[in-house]
Image 1 (cartoon, one colour):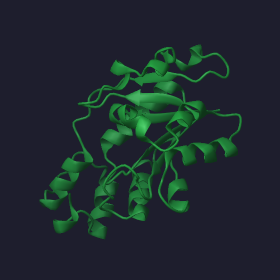
Image 2 (tube, helix red, strand yellow):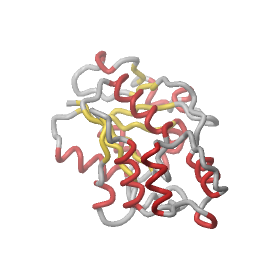
Image 3 (tube, rainbow, N blue to C red):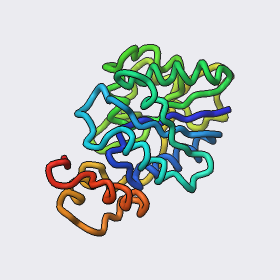
Image 4 (cartoon, one colour):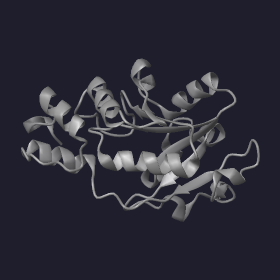
Length: 211
């Protein structure tokens, strides 16, 4: 079984996130892709919305997807949400599965600063998506050069690769979506209608609650 892991704040989740998930699931041939909102992200400012609201919005966005599903595992764990802990947890649950950690090029560039960074590439394949201003697979670290693969079917059993996920540049960002919401704009094309209805019903990202 091939299981993908895509974590983030999703503050809020937008259609760019969904396009990324679909591209990764299709190109990697994933049986399941877990989309995991972080409870307490360690490397950035705290989210504007509460973790339970971000999880609910992710679930709404993914409600019609067959192989892509929300996961509350980082919300259920106590403390800061570290990727290595999530991978360890999945490895214990699915000992025989192939794990694919899906990250943006900016996260790949910063990966050496993550907790237990050397262990992460021993637990999962890395699947990297280009991000503006990030090097990503264009500047692989020396230890990753030999691991760059074009297709997961070409992997030898037990080897862990680095994959370049191809997709069109995304015109949306959560920062811009929050700005639009705080400004009271009505038509937010980056949001699934159910997500937009939810966050408006909950009064999220309005006035001083946006950033």
